[in-house]
Image 1 (tube, one colour):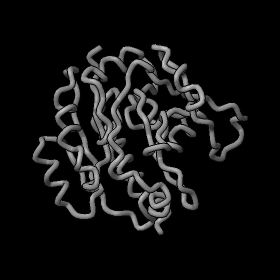
Image 2 (cartoon, rainbow, N blue to C red):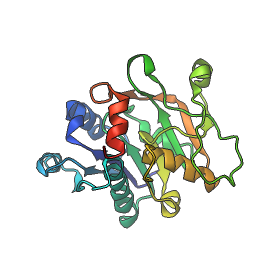
Image 3 (spheres, one colour):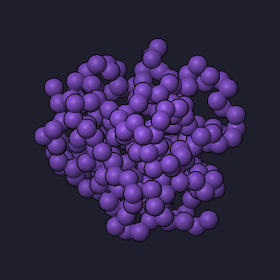
Image 4 (cartoon, one colour):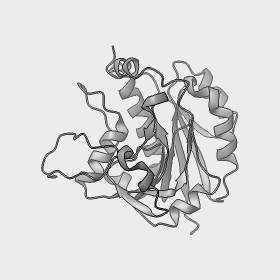
Length: 240
C-alpha cells in the first residue's frame, strides 16, 4: 500500500490562527510516502515565504481579478497541476483549518476508491452541520448545478462505521485518485456563489465517479474564526 501521496492545500494568511496546529499534525502523520504542497493565495508573498521555511513545496497564487472564488479555484488547480506533473498516485486535498487523524492517509487508501474522504462539520454556531450532502436523485442529463439535501436530518444514523456513498462531502479532507484529476479540473462559474468543491461534486456525478465518506474518520474543522458571516463570504465570492 506504499502509494505516492501528495498532501495539497490552498492557504491564506487569514487561516494562520491554526497554521501551527495544522502543520504539526501534517508533519506527524504516520504514513511514510507523502509530500506537502501549499498554494498560498495571500495578497503578498510574505506568507508564502513563511510557509517555505517549513520545508513544504509552495507556490504563491496571485489574486484573480474575477474575485475570491476564482482565486481559490486557481489555488485548487495549482494543487492539481503539481500532483499531475510530479506523478503522484493520489492527492489528499486537505484544507488548512481541517485537522485529520494521524493515520488518515493509510485509512483512506485502504478503501481503494476513486474519491473518498473523512467527515467534518461546516458553518458556525447554530448553522453548524455535517459537510455531507446525500446522493443525487435527478436526471444526469441536467447539466446545471443542483441543490442537494444535507444529511443533517439523519446525521446521527449516518455514522455507521462503514464507508458511505454520498453526493458531496466537500474537499476539506478528500483522497482523490490520479485518474480522476486527469479528467476533472477544478472550476468556478461567474454569476454563482458556488465554490470549486461544489462543482467538483457535480463533475464527479457527471462522470459517474462515486464519492465516499469513511464515517469512522472524523476531523476537527477550525473554521469558526473566519467563517462567521456567511453573507459577507458570499459577497466576497461574487467579487463585491
